[in-house]
Image 1: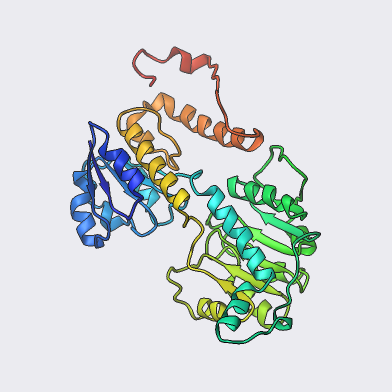
Image 2: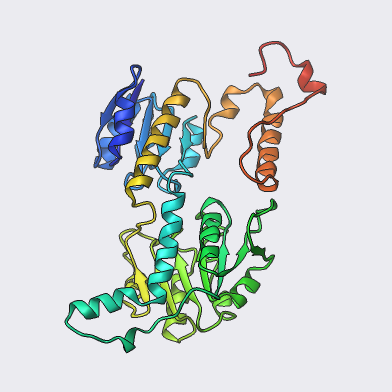
Length: 368
C-alpha cells in the first residue's frame, strides 16, 4: 500500500511506516494545493497535520485514496462531507495531545495570573518593577471549564492540585465525572461564578461564539479567559470590548479564526496589555507530536489492511456499500453509539448486539 505523508510529521511515525513491509511511504511536506491534487490519487492513504488543506480541489481526482489520517484532533482543514461522498475514511488522533494541551491551558492560566510575560519583557529591558507586576494566585479561585471531553477532564484533575474549585458545563455529557467537580446545567451560571474560564470544545456551528456579549455581561470583572481549543469559540469582538471596558481582567489565547492571525480584531487582542497570546502551541511538545504521529500512522495502516477503523469522524460510503435493508440499522447503530458515549464513564471495552426480526431474516451475504 502507498502512503503519502503530506505534512511535517515526527520521525517516530515515519520510521514506523518505513518499518512495515507492506507499506511504501512518500514524505512530501509543503506541497502546493495544485501539486497535492495531482498526486493524491496515486496513494491509498495520506497523513496530514494542520498545515495541509484537503479541499475540494485536492480531492477532485482522489483516485485510489481510501483514508486520511490527521495527526491531531481538529479536522476543520479537511472537506469531510466531500471525503465521505467519495468513500474516504477521515480519522483523527484525539488522545495523543490531550496532556500537552491541558498543560498549556494551565500554563497560560498561571502566566496570565502572575503577569509573567510583561514582567520578563520589563526585566529584559533593564527595569526592576516588582510592584507593577503583582499578580493573583490560583488557590481558592473557581475555575469554569466549558467542555468536559478528554482535555477538559485532564485540566480539571490538575486544577484540583492547585486547590481550585472546579465548575464544568457540558450539555452533551451524561456520565459521571470523577473528582470534586461541580457540573452546572447552565453556561450563564458558570460565567457568573468563575474566576477563570477555559474552553475545551470542538469548533462547530453550535460552539462558534458560544461565549459572547451575553456571557461577558454576567461575569466578574476579575475574570480571566483562556482559549486553547479553537478560534472563535470565545467571540473575539466581544472579548476585545470587554477587555477595553475593564469587564474582563485578562485573556490568554492560543488559537485564532485564521492562522496566522489576519483580522484587525485578532491583531488588537494580541497587542492588548492584558492579553497573553501564543502561536497555537497546544500540541507543540515532543511527546505529543511523537504520539499523534505514531497513532496516525498505525490507525491508517490498520484501516488500509482491512482491520479495525479507529477514530473515524465520518461514515464513509455506507450508502454505496451497504444493502438497502441494512441502511436503517446502520443509522440506528450510529445513534445508539452516540448515546452510549455520553452515558458511559470511560472507554467502551465491549459492545454486545442482539438482533431479531427482519434483519435476522436478511438473505445470506447481505450482512457485513
